[in-house]
Length: 181
Picture (cartoon, rainbow, N blue to C red):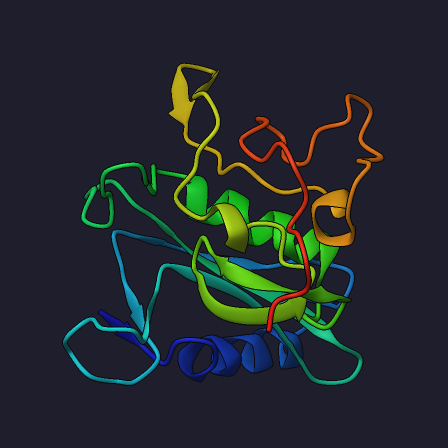
């Protein structure tokens, strides 16, 4: 278990790499772990404080970065939900692309996916955490990519997507509904 969650060791590494001139704000470094769980609480047991990945930013000018687990353990798979090998990384990269600082506002949504409460930012992976699209085969390697929601899922019907869908594998056939309370 890697302790520190959304800060700690990664922020120290980002500072060191920035100071050494190895990374810059024009780059998106990703710390990729293999079968590692991150624990924000610092305890050895995994509870509600565990994560398989996150994206964050620090400093000025702002340096964004991501942390993700390449999971082959199937430890977090449950009926109707799977992590797959690269789903955490695809989740975090997609969220970084749409919401690099975690502050792009949307109407409050929640009680779905990994969000037990309400949240109001454009995190395109959270609502479908554990839902992967059909496996992608590239150069002999199989990749498990997480399904993602589209802009219209947050803002309401009708969908402005080319085919009128609300997620990239059409698991969501309607928008998020009334704002979460």
